[in-house]
Structures are given as structure tokens and as C-alpha cells.
Length: 380
Image (cartoon, rainbow, N blue to C red; front, side, top):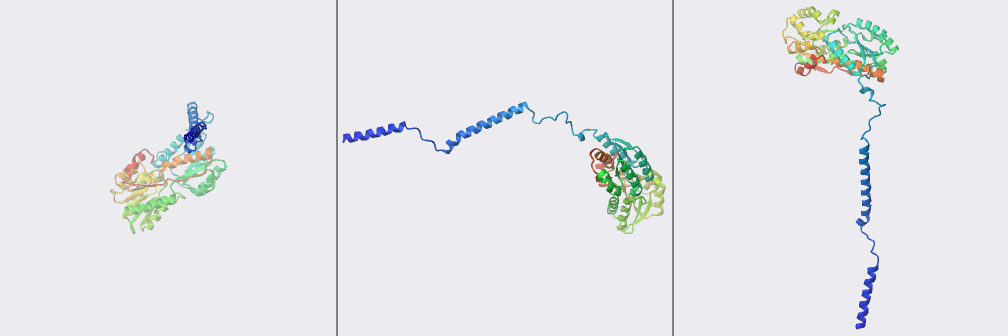
């Protein structure tokens, strides 16, 4: 029995000794298997970050353009300095509307560097066509015209200019035939759409005045001028559709050039038609002279509803004093600015003509404070 116990003990001791001498078992834990890989990835990321920091220390984030690249041409103040332009503000030098057009063109010339010559026309279509021919003879790169002479009078002259490589664009009054033919060359338009602008003013005047069927309205306009007369026609159509009786008077050449010359005409119309309750002038200078006209006719503020086109310093005063109730704003400064800009874009970059409607809205006593400071600076 003792011998058997000894044998069992000996076997157990031998088994333990053999177990201690064997190599450790291979681990099976997923965590233990991936841990070395994670260490390797961490080391790789750290190496990349170190390289990135080193790159940042030795190179700028965005490399500056080489000296030979320079700024984009349009970013330079004189990008259009190689372009010569003849520009028509339309009216007389110092006239309220034409001066604002001129100011817009002057700003565009300053912004682009264009070489611009200005020609004043007293709103005379015949003078505009003669001056246009003279401008073509100087061989400019572009001419910005007021479209008052209309397509029939202007088209042959513009055809001649375009044949000589002179870019033409229009302002204030559209020349639709030439615009359609030479739009791809850069013939654009900046201004109100004549008939639409006239019709809108007529409608707004009826709405604001409360007048209707049987009431008399005096319309002083330019129906006889092709193209330009479309605005007067729009006013007339709107008034007549509302049932008003229109007393019409064509603006004569003398009054067209100097609004003060129209005082006798105005007082004569008002005297012959004492029932007139509305007056609409289709001319910026005449609108600005409204207070003078009504006072000369013996009218007090509010005796008649007065409306017209184009804001000016005198128009502000007339609104404030109660003699003028409604003005359509063509934003003519934009006509001057875009007239010059159009020619620069077309001559320098070969852009086609743009159609820009500047006739945006109305000025009344309710919104006068917003625009008055700009009107006084001859920007609006």
C-alpha cells in the first residue's frame, strides 16, 4: 500500500515538472491580436502629422502668384483705359436730367479708365443725328447715344458706324431694330421701357388721385417723336382707359430746351380748360418746373394732382411744398454708368449688348426722405 502511494505521488510530481517546461500557449484574445497593429497605426499618424507641421513651417498655406501672373485685368483701375468713347448725355449742359446721366458716365469712366468725350444736344433729335455723324468722323471705339431720333433717322448712321468697327449702344430711348441687328456686337440699352413706363405712371396717377370717368387731365408730352413718343402714348392710353378726358399739348422745341420758356403755354392751357384736375408732364425739366407753372396759373398746392417723370432738386421742393404728388424715377444715373460700361465690356471683352431697365418705381412724399439726399447730390 505504501509502495502504491509512493508511485502515485511520483507520477504527479513528474507531470507538474513536464508542464512547467512547455512553451506558453498562443493567445486567442482579439484585443491582444489587434493591439500591436493599433500601435503601428498611431506611430504612422504621428509621423504624418510631424511631416505636415514641418511643411507648414517651411511653406505658406497658399503660395502667392508669380510676379508674371499679376492681378486679373478687371481688378485694375484702368482696365478700359485703351477705349475711346463719345457719350451723349442728351440734354443741355447743366440740365437736371442730363447732368445726372453725365454724372453716372463720369463715375464709370473713373472706375474703368475709359477715355470719354461728352456731347450735349439740348434734347434736339436733329442735333443728335448731326453730332453723331461728327462723332463717327473722329473714329472712336464706341458711341453711347440717346435714342430720341428713332430707328428711321438713326439706322443709316448707325449702320455706317458699325461698318467702320465702331460699337454703338443706346440709352433712355430704345432703338429696337439696331439693337436686334447689332446686339452681338455690343449694342445694348440702359433706360426705362418707354411705353410701359408711361402706362405705369398713368395708372399710378389715376390710383393716387382718385379721379375717374369724366375728369379732365392735361398731358404735356412728345407724341410726335418716334420712339421717345411711346412714353407719352403710354400715359395717354392709361388715362383714357380709366375714363379721363385728356387735353394734350406737344412740348415745343423752345420749351424742350428750356423748361421756363413753357410758362405761357402752361398758363394758356389751364386758363382755357378751368376744369383740369390733373397735370402730367412727360419731360424731366418740365416736371421740375411744376411748382413754377402752377403758381403762374394761380393754383394752390393740391388744387390739381400733378405728376411727371424724373426726380430732381426742383422736383423735391415741389413735392415738399405740395405742388407735385407723383414722380416716375428712371434712375438716369444708371443710364450714364451702364452706357460707358457697356462699351468697355464689348470693346475689351467682346460681351454682347445688355438690356437694362432702369425705370424702377415712383417717388412721392411718403418715400422722399429716403432718396432726397441722393437727388441733391445728382445721383438719383
